[in-house]
Length: 140
Image (tube, rainbow, N blue to C red; front, side):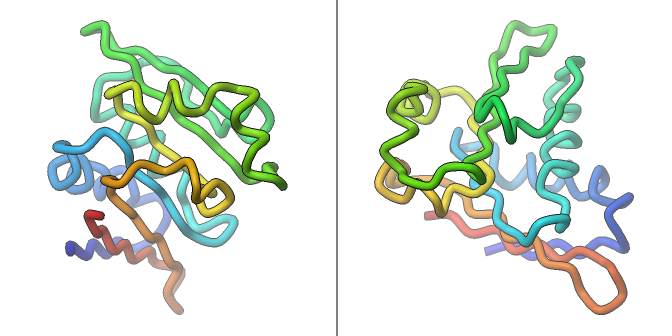
C-alpha cells in the first residue's frame, strides 16, 4: 500500500506522477472518493503524464470517454455515478473497455462490483481538515 498527501486540489497534478509510477503494472485503476474529492482532477493529471493531449473531462453523461496519446496508446475513463442497476453497463459494452488490456480509469466503480476484474488498483482520495488531499493506493 502507498499513501500520498498533497496540500490541496491544485497539487493533485504533482501526485499524479507518483500514482503513475506506482500503478503502471496494471491497466485498471479504480478511483474512490466523495463528490468533489478530486477524482476527475487526478485522472486529468494522470492522462497528461501519459501524454494525452485531448481535453480530459468527466464522462458523467457519456459514461465512457476514450483518449489517445501521440504514441497511439488508447486510454478509457469511465464514470458509473449514474448507474442504478449494474447490468445497465452491459448495454455500453463495459467489459470491452475494462478487459481490453488498455489503461482504464474508473470512477464510482462501486456501482458495478460484479463487472470488475480480479486485479486492479484502488485509489482512495479523501479531503482532510485543511482541504488537503490524502490518497491511499492498494493493489487487489
